[in-house]
Length: 193
Image (cartoon, rainbow, N blue to C red):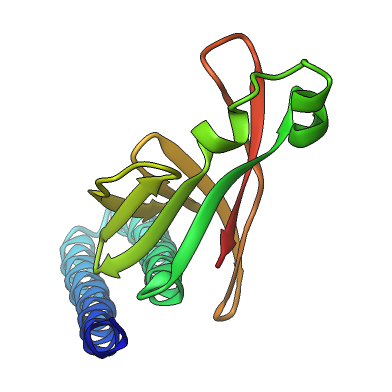
């Protein structure tokens, strides 16, 4: 198993590092395209003397807004690639920690939560491929392969929307709440195994 896991991990890392370079190239080309449009706009504004001041003001605003937009998209791309690199080749667990605000095991012991809550709602996750993960509920014989996405500080894997925060290359997954479909609210955590 370890002989297979190491090459897959290396392959995942190479694929993810290539994805990060592509986003940077795309961001650079879109920034160059925006810059050439701003230059063209400035030339057009210089041709008409009567609208020179208003065109200059407009192109200055366009330049500032294009620069801000480009910086923002690069930050999101960096955030996404940071998270994908962080989870690549790793095993995680989605598990319930609270049921209606009470510790889940205590709630099950006191008959306030279904007795099978931990068993039925715990999912093992392996991020074995770029943008794909293998998921398996406890006791399930056959794992499922699912795509995942990272956007707006959320890792989405099937029905799970896992919030996170980043600080440099460190990713912290935050707890989140979801309905159990039976009138209860489960608070989940996403941890590295």
